[in-house]
Length: 332
Image (cartoon, rainbow, N blue to C red; front, side, top):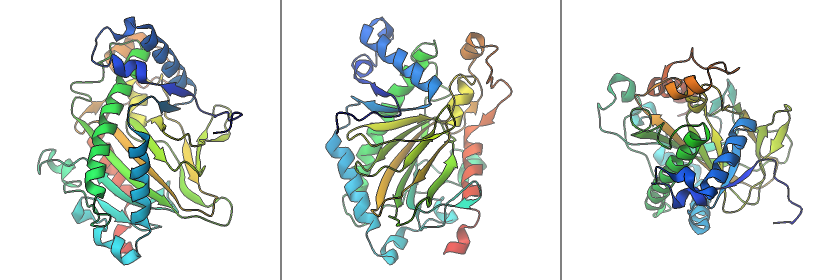
């Protein structure tokens, strides 16, 4: 990396927290306290930040991307063997043009995955997403690799959320139990074809509708853009071995608006194919998401107060999925 590199997003080393992650008195540690201070600033000012020192090996992160490139390089007919359908619980491969953001077609292809759960566990709402994730036979090792990766991302997300709970002035465990004791997750494995013209929208401007997102992107292509406080689009230049983490709409509500979910988009102007693995860490599927009492008390008159907001996460997710893929059968 060039020595004059200046990222537009904060870089946060989470390693002090990971050492103390199961200690309820972790804030007594000066390293944890400094991490929490930086995290709070990043969540208030930008809602996006790089995470380093996270303990997930750079070689695993790189292998996940390499295998993803191998899948998207397959012939279209091969990729269609795991085609996304409503009958498959909206899990599987979608070709370019299937995904819409704010009513506009996105220029990407993807594999969509969700946490698997027992049939009937979430009643009528959950039935829409019931099914097993569809993994390709080629590359053969892909499913095993991704199972390991998902577990590590889940653990990391839980610890980041403990840091956020501390940053908001609570204990490390304010979000756990009925809210995030049995977290749902979503993963989108996305491929953005290279283009030879400017401003082809790989994914339109949006906020993430869940809790936290971890983004693992190609190291050699800059395409993710974040809207900053000045209203300008700032590029999230890749830093090898890091994740980009951002706040979703559910965390905005839970924090009573203290932390904001930030608009972002993807424009891949490069001629090279780009992959991104986005892991979305969510609340319990059936959680009623509303501002937590402790944050209503701490921030009663906050200018972005979310006191009037209440949403069942699973219903919110299913509505988003069905809206996004309203025209899915047309693309068979």
